[in-house]
Image (cartoon, rainbow, N blue to C red; front, top):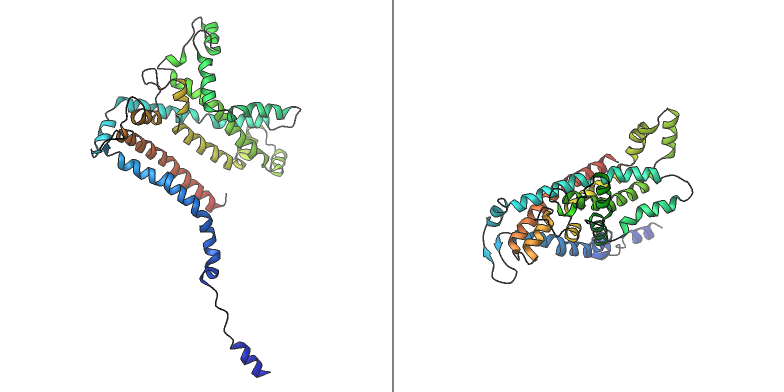
Amino acid sequence: MAIADVSISATPAPQRSWWRRNQQRLTPWLFLLPGMAMFLVYVIWPIFESFWLSFYDWDGLGEKVWLGWGNYAELFDDDAFYTSLWNNVLWLVLYLLAVPAGLAIAIFLNQNVFGIRLYKSLFFFPFVISQVVVGLMFSWFYAPNFGLFYKLIEWLTGTGVAVLADPELVTYGIIAAGLWPQIAYCMILYLTGLNNVSPDQVEAARLDGARGLRMLWYVILPQLRPATFIAVVVTVIGALRSFDLVSIMTDGGPFGSSRVLSFYMYEQALSEYGYRMGYGAAIAVILFLIMMIFISGFIWKMVRDEREGY
């Protein structure tokens, strides 16, 4: 018996291949590899390409001429750039109204009454239609002489207001159009979040006498933190990327007063007014750095929440 035990223990273990020894560690990376390659080609590489191009004067076809910081020096002395930057700030501040508006509508719709699905569908409708359609609808809404908004103001004050032709009002009119689908998007996020609110905590708060705004502030909103986080992130990025409504409703006018940075970049780099690829790239770099401030803050908060177990 002792001789048999010695012979078994002396048998060498079968040698596993390198792939079998590292399979579990490498498999996730293999699944991520196609996505990482696409991200590298379509996101990371264009970012560095834009930085590099912003130091040149180039029309897209001819020879590039090195300017160094020349495009940036011209940009910081460009009144149109500051108009676009200010409009982006307006977009950023006013676009965030979509978050509380979406929350209010979601709370209103989060009830079980007859026909509530139809009401939800009607509020959801602006989100599923194209931004181009939204822009056209609001252009008709503001149109002088026959637009509903123009007629309403004319009926109230005796004089109509051509919103899209007024340099002081045009950006607010476009932002109002952008808020329509964005409120619907935030509403969807909050409706999903409200379905996950703990009924036990709500009932316990009611027994303790919490009602109305106290219930909303101390019980409901803390449980909606993930939905609020996503709503704020998407709204901020949407505000900074605003382009399509400006292009459809005013094409940057009147007199360039409704431009935003993304539209000004397009005008300088790709439209018939420019073909200045280097100058457009410099605008893109500035917009990217502004977005990175917000994106870095959001990522930092997300990592902190993960570590704290929210």
